[in-house]
Structures are given as structure tokens and as C-alpha cells.
View 1 (cartoon, one colour):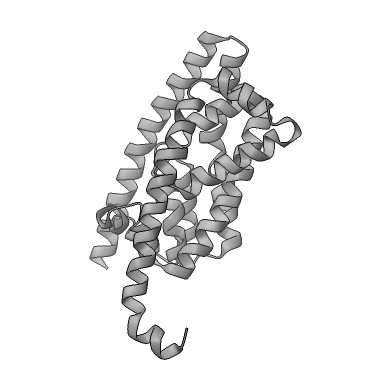
View 2 (view 1 turned 90 degrees about the horizontal axis):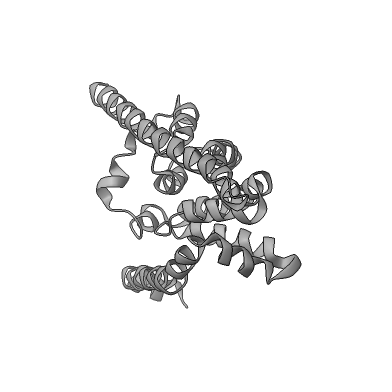
Length: 234
């Protein structure tokens, strides 16, 4: 394809690419993501399905987590609970984090390549603009780490938005991995308790996760409001 042809039809080709990406993500979500979510909500069947792959079962699970991270419309909690049930809290957490790291690398590089248009495939501009308070270069890493650590914050949106900042990919991977440990491990502990039929403990774990998520969301909104006000005053 000649450079002249590309310059003339850049907008049209870009629009076609975005339309294809939207259709592709929708198809993946409906025909793969949704059935997987329903499957993961039945941990016994999910474990049996994973076990059917033998030694490749863990790689299959990591691939599922990578898909979940990239296709932001697919929630991660059912798979984290299923990981705890199928592999135990420690191994389940490590497998989830492995998938999160791989997915985060892919997202970061794609956003650096295609910019904000990639975010618009999954999130409305209103939500994207609400994170502009994170573009404070002096305290970017610290603020990002804090909001990623808080349970209940929009981690999928935060993961995509990181590629729009000046953050280094190595810094982002450290934040994306370490900051997600608290939310992942609470889910895998609950799933592990279900697997060992410790239903009371599982209920307590899930209730604690819900309470922490609510508190984290309130703190996140407070930070967002304060930082936005400070940026507008400067």
C-alpha cells in the first residue's frame, strides 16, 4: 500500500479498523466471555473442565485471565474465585497474577500504539476524562499505586489509561502486579474455602471483600475529587 494511498484514506481505514475491533470484542464477549463467566460461577464444573486439559490446564487458565484483562467488558472476579477453588489460594493467586501481567503488557503496548481511540472501544469518554487527575507527572506513580491498591476501583479502566501517561512499562508492570494482590487473593481465598467446603469462612471472606470494595470506592472517589480540584486550581 503506497504512502499516498494511506494518507488519502487514513481516516476511512482507521474507522474500519475501529469498527472491526468493536465487532470482534463484542463477538468474543458474547460467544466466549459470557459462557466462560457462567461456567466460572460453577466452580466444580470449571475445575473439571480445567482438569480435562491435563498438564496444559494451568496454561489454559492463564490464557483465560489474559483474555479477561484485554477484553475489559469481561469481569475478573468469577475467574479469581474459580482459581481459588480449582488450584487453591496460593497457586490460584499466582496464576491470576501471571495472566494479569501478560494482559497488562499487551494493553500497555496497544494503548501506546493506538492512543485514546482504543480506550473508547470499552469505556465512554466521560469515564476516560474522569482519570485526567492521574496525569500529574510528579506524583503519578504514587497516586496510581494507591488507587490500584484500593478494592472497588475501576482497575480495567486504570489499566488501559496507564498507556496514555508518561509511566514506564516496567513501573506499570510492578504497580499492576503488586497493587492487584489484595483484591485477587481475597477472591482466591474465598474460592479455596468453597472448595474445602468451609462455607462459613467463604461467606466471611466474600462479605469482607464486598465491604472493602465499598470502602475503597468511596476513598477512590474522594481522592479523585481532591486531585481534580487541585488540578483546576493550578
